Structure formats: structure tokens, C-alpha cells
Length: 199
Image (cartoon, rainbow, N blue to C red; front, side, top):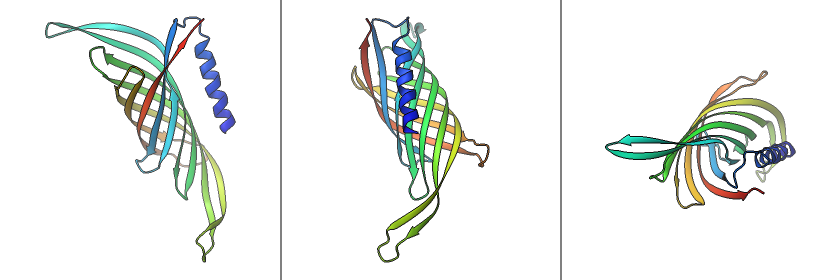
């Protein structure tokens, strides 16, 4: 699973950086967040935001002209979360999103849809040493799920290179052999703007 995740990240980065329309200088926001399904299953997510299209609009409000930057982006992500002594989960996810930011404000908002693949290692039974309390053996089963989500993100720029964000996602874990169910995910994290120059 880890090898597959590395290959997907390398492929996404190589595809993005070799695009013929790449500008002289490109910003790639790298995000790292605490991610908790149902708010109580601790985990993390690592992602990078790849802008696909960006444009500016001018709006008139109370006699003032407001410049708003809008963009479409794709964000590949990898993650992990767990319910201790019940299951561990590896996540491979991609989101297609729309970002809106007023140029005179430091805050922004995103709305996106995602499709993820979750590989779960479910603990079926375990053996406990009664004298020490140590868990000596675990019987596990691997379960695979697809997870579509709808996501809303709010964030604020701290400096030209750093920012923080919070995100709420509603999705569904779906599989052919296991019963599906809804999942609510909360994220809180940081973003770092990585600047790259083309040739």
C-alpha cells in the first residue's frame, strides 16, 4: 500500500510540473493536517494543491471595486487514521475543488468533492496476557472501501508562505462485501506554499 501511495504522489507531481502551460513561477500549497473521522479517530493527511485554472473577477460593493481571485484545483492526498484496538486505515484520496479569495482579505474558502480509496486492517480477535496485560497476538482482516466526499474548507493566510485551515467533510464508506455507512471527518492543519520555477 505504501509503495502505491508513493507512486501516485510522484506521478501527480511529475505530470503537474511538466505541463506545457506552466508559468515561470508556480506555487504548490503543501498541506499537513490532523484528520479525525467522527472527531475521535485520530489520524493525519498530507496533500498538495495543484491549480488547474485561475482567474480574477471584479465586483462592485458599496461604491468600491473588490478584486476576487477564483481557481479550480486538484488535490491528491494520502492519510492514515485509526480506532485503537479496532482497526487501522490507510487513505489515498483526490479532491476537485473551487477556491475563492478576496484580494483585500487574508481569509479564503474552498468547496470540493473527493473520491478516496481506504484500505482497512480490521482486528477480528486478539490474545491478552492476563498477568502483564500485553497483547501477544492479533487476527486481522483487510477490507477495501471507496469513499466519495463533499468538503468545505476555511482558512487564513499567516504569511506569504504559511497559512492554517479547517475542513469538514461528509462522505460514505462503500464496498461490495461490507456494509456501507456515512462518515463525518474533521481536519485542522497548516499549509506551506512551495515555490518552483520552470526552465
